[in-house]
Image 1 (cartoon, rainbow, N blue to C red):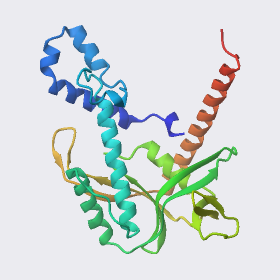
Image 2 (image 1 turned 180 degrees about the horizontal axis):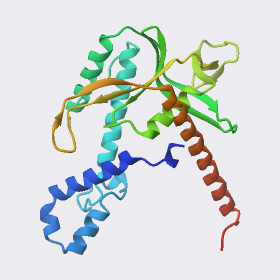
Image 3 (image 1 turned 90 degrees about the horizontal axis):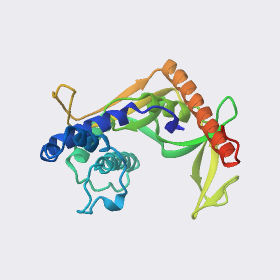
Amino acid sequence: MLGALAKDGIVDWAVANTAAYAAANVDQLLKRTETQGFHMLRWYTKRMKPEKFDNPSVDILDYSNGVLDDLANLGSRVHEFVEDYLNDNFLPDLVRPEQVQMAEQFIDWVEGREIEVLGTEITVIGATGAGLPYAGTFDILCRMDGETWLIDTKTSRKVHQTHLGQLASLGAAQSMIVEVSEGSEGAAEYKGKWYAEKPLQGIQRYGILQIRPDDFDHEGNPISAFCKLKEVPQDVIDSAWKLFEGALIARHAERELKDLEKRGVTVE
């Protein structure tokens, strides 16, 4: 569903990495005409097949795919660390300085609060007002300061509308899939474990837990690593839910158009 919404963060990433590539490859740009240099940078963000990343014979005009994957892996590793820490599991190895910074910031944040974890990385199921079904996975459901919070962990520089739509949809879900003991009423087996559907209700507050390493702002000023819980007001959640519903309708419409095209119903 989120693919139907604009992602300004991806645009910012593409611009920043194109600029970085140009600065790091000035010698290559100087060997080309202005037109050649333009097209060299123009296709910089084009996706390249992963098997070519380490091929020395390939001119890495679109190395940015590797950068994007690197950022995605960083976010995944931090999410993994947060989940394991909250559940007292063995913690994943952190190698990169950014990972260590973000983990330290999260530990400082969580250790200063009394948090009762109700669930992490749990799949939920819901339906829109138009009856369109959907499913997703929330990061953290917990009791904090006497209230039930639904929290989404983000490692991006800012909170985007897609993040809000995602959070709203997770909170609007009717049920969640939880692991239960074998033979429990209504349970189903999946890969050796048993799961059952239970109501998701009682969410009182919403938040985005933003975790960032040391960084720089748009003017080059340093920004220290931090972990901050940003509460999302209910009015914002209500509007973000409308955004989610609209995007889901758009995705279904796109699928219908593709099905019609496959059946030969096209505009000549």
